[in-house]
Length: 72
Image (tube, rainbow, N blue to C red; front, side, top):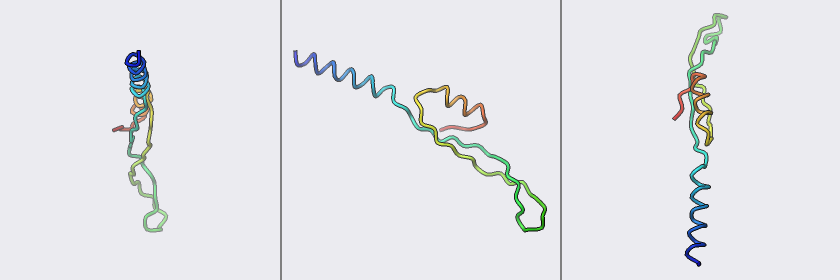
């Protein structure tokens, strides 16, 4: 009887941990206008925009990627 109870606990724990969220780092390049030398002329620079996303729902990652992010 103990073995069956222990097996039940193990199955429940495995099912809980199998649906845990995974963390992704999502990045994209964005354009930023800056006055690099103070002459009033704006220049466009591209910088990384980073967002950390922890989720168990793959639709959230698909949504970020549809916004131009690359998630890994």
